[in-house]
Length: 124
Image (tube, rainbow, N blue to C red; front, side, top):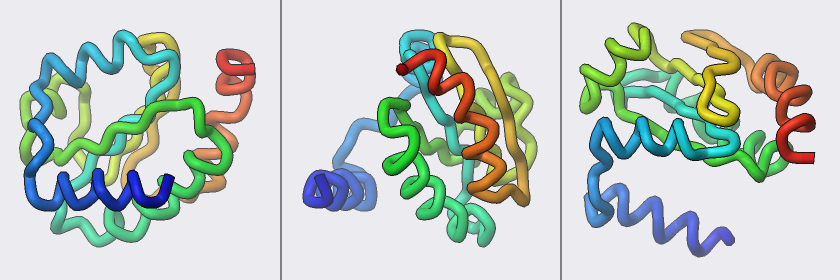
């Protein structure tokens, strides 16, 4: 699993993977049973510090949910249409509907508490 993460990370780093379109992201939201969208920018220190903690939390506690990391500066129209005006912003979707949203300074404990109940209902 770690080797796959490294390969995906390197592919993203060197732009080997196809860039997702706004429609690809909207389709992912619509079709995923559970999805965490993480909006960030490379210049955001809070984004850089929080992301590895969120990745670990999702892997350990909510492994059945999909995760999608979206660079806000590359998807301005999507951000505006979703009301994302600060970074980081995390939005949890279950069965295509927005369930919860966190922005700016958020702890992994808050995210965990927010996701636990609905995750258990949807996935267990």
